[in-house]
Length: 282
Image (cartoon, rainbow, N blue to C red; front, side, top):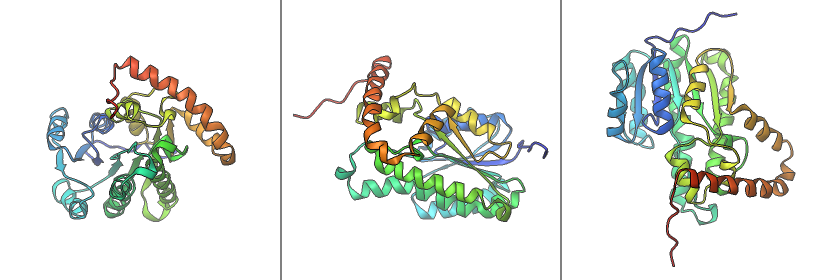
């Protein structure tokens, strides 16, 4: 059995760092002793997060869809931090607009943020991660990477593809020296989920009680050790989703029943958090 990896003073880059999940991941990594590179669109939220950390962080505010910013990251991290040992691909967005009504630019941006940004950033940082000696990439995917969501088709497609990429790259560890792992959370109680709850997100998000962002962060920290390449949170929902996908021809018959149960869960969620649905246009 190999010795546990030591992460104190190692460098981690986290995308979507200032969000509900990203900020909890950063606090966990800080507690594990890592130095952090925080990347997010919101400069003020990044500064507020950095103030909570036990050691100075490099804050980079900007849109990762900007190719120039994306390509500048490896050189900047190497110059200011000396190395990159861990990449956490966390940034993501979801649209609740039905696919047949979505604008092309909206579809493109959702695919860019959820799929292209982590794909390209992983490729750009791979030389630094390979040079680390214990480089890791941990990607926050989704249970929607396993179970298709009719109301969030582009989101689900991006996460399916992202999961396929990361599982494929995990097989290249003998070549790259970099360990790849995925976290597939079920619905997480974040502002994004609250928006989905009242704006037509998938009822499947509410089949069970949404989990806290801290559970995702704790799973990321657990994946700093060991050889696991995928964790579903909670594990039971992961097994249920994988079982359902063994019989894709049955999904059109099974999903309506799941949706009815999910809609009841949505109403409980909205009531418990006193959310307000947007006024309907007349």
